[in-house]
Length: 435
Ligand SMILES: Cc1cc2nc3c(=O)[nH]c(=O)nc-3n(C[C@H](O)[C@H](O)[C@H](O)COP(=O)(O)OP(=O)(O)OC[C@H]3O[C@@H](n4cnc5c(N)ncnc54)[C@H](O)[C@@H]3O)c2cc1C
Image (cartoon, rainbow, N blue to C red; front, side):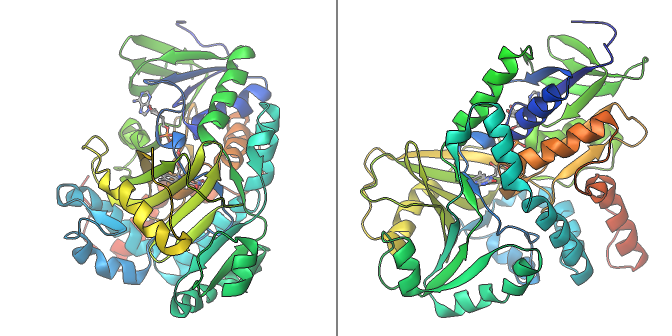
């Protein structure tokens, strides 16, 4: 522990895929990096995701029809999207901001930003994985979305021109064509979409652990501690207050997933982040093989071939992160997957739950605290944290160095939520939010 910070020391809070990627990129740039986490690296949401490096996810999460359904979702317990009644008050602020995000102009600018990040995602993650010796875990054989009904497929196809506008290669497939690509799909699929340049990671946890290993072997320090607060210090740096003492750095990057909101609250209006829990069911011997991630459109969840078997993953459960998991939500994925894949062997299946850090516009928060240039942040990647981890790291590393980021992330700061509110309040659309 030091009392004054060396000019090139950076503390990264959080050893999930975002924090480890940021730490690795900073180490590559010559910084002395310390990673602080209350847990082992890759113990949180990043350990069990679907491993899909998707080019499809460029739209904000909330659509007008979904917001209309929110009251009904409060009551359902087994749907693909549920809100636990006890968590509903925490959703109020998220919902108000989501109302801003569904407006046409906002949707367009959110889609622009997400697409801009997404088209750089694969190249940057492949580069970082190679740097850490993890290239064999990354591949690019495309990704599929499969639909049971023509109506759902038609609805999805309305977005084809938007994806193509950003140079994302996507093809509409008939039921027969999709089965040629993935013979394991059961007959009767109406058709789907093929995203040619999407990729996958066959073991997201192992990839993150390779990053951690590489960091440590090259001099990074891992500190196991629960961070209570981050403050600017008297020397122009920042101090991390942990349960076992203080750590001083020239810069700090908060990458604590869902819990980042709490750490940044002293510097901004309450961050409208929510805990969107997702589940997976790992099938060690599924009895069939997929060649690439397949997203099933009705309801929305994914199956990805992994080193350890077939991973069925998805569902959205807005609930307190610490409340007991409902593993029935993971187990129901087996039944739903059989509607697309036919009989699957569920023997030895292992359920898992993770807390997605979700912001109401579907964009991550990347930036630095207003007026305190030593405190940076990168969190809130929701459904795209693995995909966007390396491009996020490149942007943060540039910001820490005081250089221009490789893509325009000027709109990703937390101030965007203040601005959204001011605009709506001026229009009289919402009452003042609780602080
Ligand atoms: C079912 C499911 C499927 C998914 N599938 C995909 C997918 O296919 N592709 C994709 O790109 N994304 C996917 N995601 C999303 C992705 O997993 C997340 O966006 C990503 O893991 C978030 O990473 P993170 O590093 O921000 O958070 P985390 O992995 O949660 O890491 C945060 C870390 O911060 C630490 N921490 C928090 N607070 C403190 C504190 N006060 N002091 C010290 N340490 C602290 C935690 O212990 C944790 O280790 C999926 C998510 C789920 C749940």
